[in-house]
Amino acid sequence: MPEQIRIESGDRWDTLELVERLPGCRWYLVERRAGAWDVHLEAQSPALLAELLEVAEGWARDRHVESVVHLSQTDIHLPGRRDGASRQAQSTTAAAA
Image (cartoon, rainbow, N blue to C red):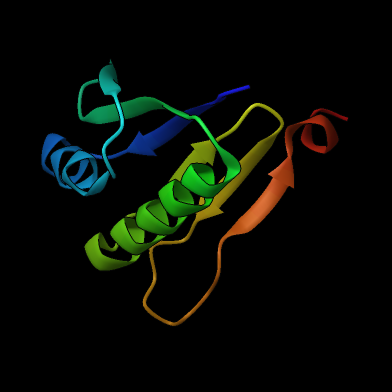
């Protein structure tokens, strides 16, 4: 079953840079509020999901943008730093408790 993904982005230029990097998948953009965009897409396979997460992590690091990747059961926080800090997963079920 495809994984629904929502990636929080910053301004329009950061968002356009992200979607240019996405590997051959369909996406659409939603402007949550002025200057805050979300990229919505689906990962059809676990391999594609892993690739999308790697792309998003590289984008956040290169653009120095903090972001959150929302999956069905997990939120992955991307710190947007170059110091080698890896993404941190936090279960939404644990966060809701």
